Length: 81
Image 1 (cartoon, rainbow, N blue to C red):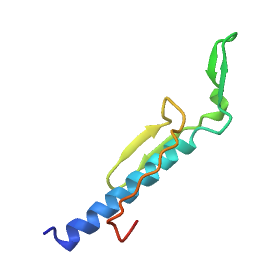
Image 2: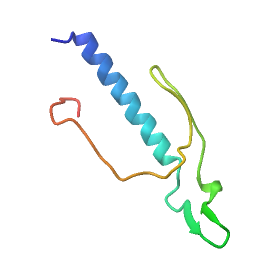
Image 3: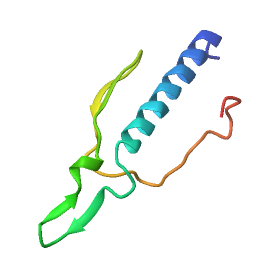
């Protein structure tokens, strides 16, 4: 059985990961994708913002190279979720 400390660290890591992913997704404004074939332009760069996350478990410079995917997930076994 995992120790309470190990479980707490795992939840801390998961919380930071979820926060980071949210920051990366939120870096794209909802209307950033323009898909203009004549220009050609996929996205308006002024609507995609940098992310510079430095945390306990993760360090990331963003943004992502694609907009948000509409996925949600959570553990049905977690008392934290």
